[in-house]
Length: 579
View 1 (tube, rainbow, N blue to C red):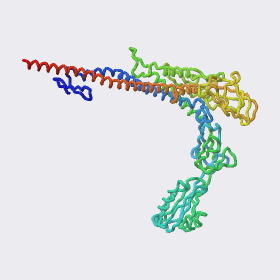
View 2 (spheres, rainbow, N blue to C red; view 1 turned 135 degrees about the horizontal axis):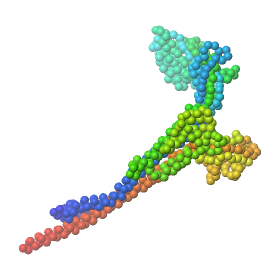
View 3 (cartoon, one colour; view 1 turned 180 degrees about the horizontal axis):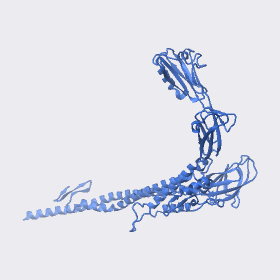
View 4 (tube, rainbow, N blue to C red; view 1 turned 30 degrees about the horizontal axis):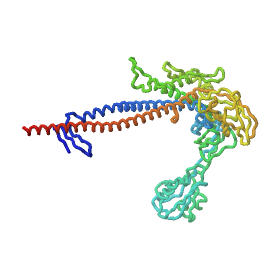
């Protein structure tokens, strides 16, 4: 049954009252909305917290990137560990300086050294002076065919041409009688990646076209023959004996040939790039000039060292600028809206750790050696930015590069060539110590190891000695390369902890993407955001339930009002009938 009143109607649907309009005169929909809306206030607060979490997470990400830049800048200055550490160590970086002069028997004016050769020095190169005399440069085999009337008329010979470089892969090219010079060149070049030979059609003059073939590698001979005999190569004017010899050789293949340090026997190589003559040096020869001596001085690259230290200072200052930006407070005591990490424990602890790293000194260095950054012209200003006194800094690099190196690096020296550091996972400061090897087995593996005054602090893992957790040597891994079945050996070792090593280890602890302190903070914020989002979902579910409850409650109220109004109307009608 449906009831209709002056202000609304009420009906039943599946046994539940459905309200349209209002019998009571109340705006029940607005009342329900207001009551439900009141339940949503926690969602507003949670959304605000999510937004704050996102902003703080972004600030942490910026901080993490700046700390990572500092870590990278410090890495090449800290004597990176491992067998390949020298390749990344800027203090091992070398540069080569070239000059030329006439040698014994030389005549005329020597060409500039850089016109004759170029030298690239790797970090593994040994500093020193070397002398080169370029006798020959390597050449690529180049041949040409005879005269053809044009490049569009068919060759007139059908055959299979086998072509390649001596010792390399060959390809069979199907030559048809209607092939012209241009199409033959295209067919040869389509196989250049395999054969190492490229071809071109050369116009000498009207009625004089020739094929030119060039090896793509120096000191490699072009080989070719036709399956059907001599006709094809003879027609092209390349060979009268089916490739046994060539009629027109423009350039014979030959190796490069240079003398080093006056040694009478020259070295020869197939190419003009020689990287296996002197360890760490790659030599590119450009021009032969017998009688001219090119002197190459290999030395440490001061420019690279200077730039890396400057980059280190820049990275530190950029991080410092970010830290200061998070501490801004107005004159009335209000924290700046941009200071997202104001009072943050992670930023505060990072600032403290880096400040201690920078303001300290490198320990365990010889008496009188450079031991502070101030000693090389690098100081902190009133805002704790690093500044460089160029005059003091440049003088230290030129006159005391070794001490500058010791100032930054993790130092490790041993009186035995059998031991080396291959890993450091923390800032290990153990000074001087004596490593005792009990002996080795038939494989050269130590049978026992101890440190005087510390005892058994290394675990033996094959040739590796791994510092035990909970000891001063935790995080250090040494490699031992003693002879098989050798007797006991005591090794005196000295270590020092430079500025770059300290900064690197601090930065690494904070910046590494997995397990780093900042990464943990970002992860915690992400987890907190998930909790907030889940709580919002729960509240929204409760609000739906609450709205349904209110609608049911108000519908019942309206139902009661509707029935009351209906009975009132019936009574009024009954009374009027009695009159």
